[in-house]
Image (cartoon, rainbow, N blue to C red):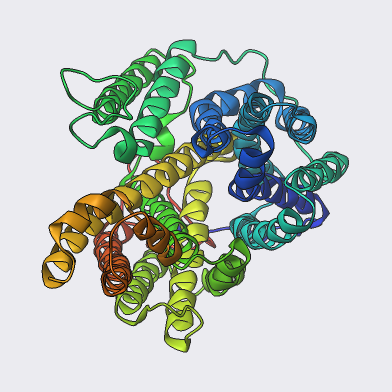
Length: 541
């Protein structure tokens, strides 16, 4: 049963500028970190693995604290807590600018992640507080597009500044955005909070530990080992890698969190997150779809730059140019897809979106080659961007519109947890998948090239070179007794194996995208200008 929503009075878009820029602030900071790694490694004299801890620390802080942050926002009041954490984010950028050691930079990103853990649900809650109906859907689309445009601008600006000046000026930009967001936050309308709300510390510890363990486990499947512990593993459990152990323990703690939360709700006590936001198959389908969408995006954002920068040896600026068709398409589609909401239900848009991403990935797996500027490759990235942009906005909108305004913070925390975990899982699985496929591909290619004797293979250890450029491979071969003909043959193996691995990886991602059509078929059938009957007797569609 559905009923029509009454006409809503239009609200000024000026408050939305602050929320849009808050999303830009977080996304720009995230995109700036990979670009800054080289500068930090050079300036601080630390290994890349230590510098990359800045990225890990930020993601861990967001994912582990976002649910607690949402409840804190409900207690303090969304506008007040929003201003506080924006100021905290500004302080983190000052720490990055002035960092005398890499550990200050890592601490700065821990502060930024803690602030972002509250900014994420704040944005959702303040959209629900300030906008209704079609304006709310448009605002949600703008938040989705902000992520894409931030990534594009960060790559372009960061690549230029990193080459001409250094890595620190990137965080002057982050600081400037934070100051503007803080100033504009005074245009927002919000409640004063509810001081009677108590934060469930047990649930906070359970979900925080679960997210940390799951993130560390998936992120280190390659370096620590997917089953047996490698020499890089910090420890082993009866010979097993700690990565899968972390994943299993994380899943157990996650289940314990849900059991504890259900028990707390049955007792009439305030939970860390109200599980009614997952009360029907529609909302659960939206969460599954969001996880797959973000994981696919993380896979593509990891796979293509890896190939362009490492194998082809091109610059971050070249990478941003190659990814521009995808990022710009996501930005435009995420903004414009709301225009389709009055004509098509979420279920139709979701299924079509996953069909588009599946077709695009299959197409790319056949047409991609060493030249990313070809029309077929650009066309594939554009089609994938259309599906991706539509899906990111759609599933977010389904969750927001399905929940009452007072639970918008819970929806925001659910979104933040899902997106950060999916991003970590997607990146880690893409790396594990590509390295595994690469090992098989190189083994087959070496057999097919008899001019590469076993003695040379042993000297180069091509299995452990992973994704290397042709120039690096030639440099490695100079330390061996390889003949010019053998060097050429090894470079050929490098090119063919890496490109073949990329193609097969894209094809497997297409299979995952195709499977996602199943949860998409469970999305709501009603349009956003209609609302489902909220009574308990109403069934799921």
